[in-house]
Length: 303
Ligand SMILES: Cc1ncc(COP(=O)(O)O)c(C=O)c1O
Image (cartoon, rainbow, N blue to C red; front, side, top):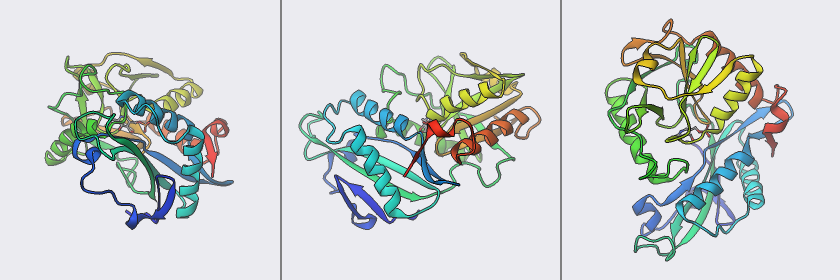
């Protein structure tokens, strides 16, 4: 993972100098909030996809966790992201803003410490299956339930929440599959470890309701792109058996983009290959992020 410069508490530093002291409460207890954003090379320059929406969710995540006074405004963060992307000088790249509890906070409250903020940028890396986009992923239903929204704040990208994802995905990999699908405590489908989930039934896209999931920006993007293609989109409670009999299934997220699922719990989904609707949405998404879609203008922030 190559990264040249990191913006840390207002200063641009070489990434190998962007370090935090071992005695930092946020590191010990997972008290941090982050975003995952991508920038893409377009015909008219490098552009960050849906930056405003990501930074708004970043602010909301901080508020949900309880960081009430962030040291930087939305506009300052927007400029800091742009500057870090420019300074690193990559083409396609991944952007990781993170705020963590520092300068105290050892008594298990946020108020005795301070939020520190950094933004890293690294060269684009393959997250899920993009090397063989048409082949699709093999997935399993995890034995780990998703966080109950009464116990963990699932609308926030809080670092500590991702222990649940690490448990589920490590287990999935050790079983020889690519990704885990998590059910909620009542047995309804929620999302994957770092991406949302859609099923295709006929000409309808179905996705779990927002109850216990991270409300993905790609999930919302897919809903818009699907409507453009004349497909209907529904939120519905889905059970494990719905997964098995879907015509198509795919994951979507900033890192994953849109990737088909070809198998769940050793049952082929549809034809066992990425289906035509998933392919059409993948193409529409690639046009959107590359500045070649009618919606690109409203979604791209040129740096
Ligand atoms: C748990 C989880 N769900 C869904 C998503 C997809 O969100 P987005 O499309 O905003 O990247 C992510 C990725 O950030 C995630 O970590």
